[in-house]
Structure formats: C-alpha cells, structure tokens
Length: 116
Figure: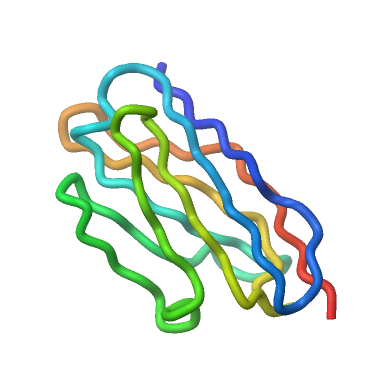
C-alpha cells in the first residue's frame, strides 16, 4: 500500500509563507503525476496545483503568482511553496498521487490556518 505523508502546515499571519511537503513511499514516484488540493470547512475539495512526471505545472487561478509546486524525484517528495498567504487560503491541504500503473492515492491532509 502506497503512503503519502504531508507535513509543513501550521498557523501563519496573512502575508506570510509556508512550505508543504508530501513524501511518498515505494518506488513509483517518478511515474506519478502529483497534485495538491484543499478543502475549507463547509466547502468542496478543490484543486490547487498539479505537476506532471515531466514537471509541467498547472495552478488554480486563485493561487497563481503566489504558490509554486515542485518535485524532487530523488526524495520521492512533492512540495507546495505558499507565499503571500491570505485568510481565505485557510483549509486542509491534501497531497494527491496519480499513476495509471499504480492507481490514485490521497494523503491524510495537513491544516493550514492563515490569521488576519
């Protein structure tokens, strides 16, 4: 069973920064497209950013210019650098693993709280 372990969440003031990490177990990271999603209380889970096996990135409009997704295949880890955080970025952030060969997996989530 593949596992995804997120870290890096916490409480930050508006305008601050956080970097989320998602470490994956096993040896399939290189063949997986990875993503970050978030879910705020009372709202549906929504896409934040994705990165393909070729490191092509895609961002939701509401984070463009503020968040950066990256991957380190040597460490089996995907990152989300979040700058200029806003109170509306408060949510549980989930890592997502997608591979046609291995399947799809979610991390357990990490809480990000941005105070005004």
